[in-house]
Length: 444
Image 1: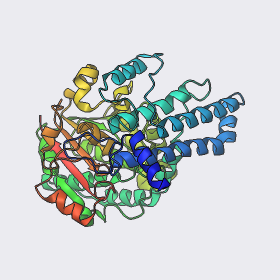
Image 2: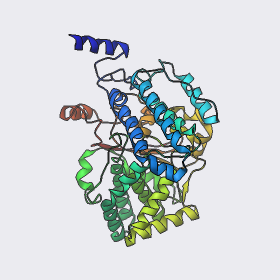
Image 3: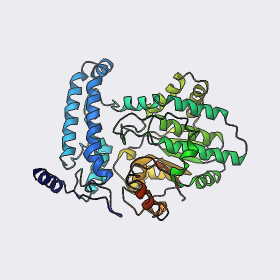
Image 4: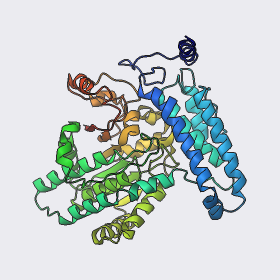
């Protein structure tokens, strides 16, 4: 009886409902059978603990690299992160940020715009999760010696290293390809798009930082994964690219570093090589974000990693990609937009960051990678799954756009009638596993 009473008190205190998120509701931890609840109650506390543990394990290496003066700062950081974990687990209200720069002033404007209770278990899941990751970064920013420390770097780097054999297999497939006709270019593009889609399975924020490996030959396994692609608009993407007659300016809004970033650059290289784009812009994150998201130094680590494999074709790829960055065919947009690490949904971009919206609108195609970008596209709203992809964008359509995303959150649109129900009957957790993927397109 005491256990039941404690559970009832817990649910009452945190305003919890023991049910799934209803259709046409925002995703929040209010619903105990939602992924939002699992993330805030279980996954994020584990991620925070892992940051603390990594700092403790790496303390001597950090001190050696950054100087003895940072030893006490590491202790202070660990203490503040522990306090943040307590705030999360006790559903404290969001604190405003110190307005030390324009970016943090905008964060406070965002917090003021939230109309629900501003706490972890009451606010929209997207808001709460993004806020937490920004608070973690603030703790490091307030130090003297750890301001630029990437507390997720070792995990990202290891993920790439452990995918080495698959990367070599992809290199071998690329080296052997012989493509001449338009039809062959089209068919191989579809393969590269699928390769890039399934690369999104390597997401450390979903595994709470646990190692992710890709061990098979990814190209060889693509056909067997077709049955897991719920929506495939690759033909529309091809037609969109062809309509630009080789002059397409393509923006990739990246997700994860490591193996997925490698497949991003493979796709970008293919578009340039076969005259489907004249320039590819990579939109990376400005701060450590959702564990595995790609920062600028992750690109350099990738290129150096390819060189260090001593694999002839991978070394060639690294050299070729470095040259593409030098000649302007590849570009990392700088300064990196802080909008990507804000809590805003993309439908609010035009008002919240008009310069970014205008820049994107001048491109021919936007490629949004991964689950968090998808959640922001759909505003963390549990749409009826049969709602069209275009309608679920809430008016956000600066130009043609597509999304390559493995399904790891309970939000989706564009499915045919009955598909969601059939999948739920097979596996109630099908929206949380990353087993399924979508390739979705919306034209301007």
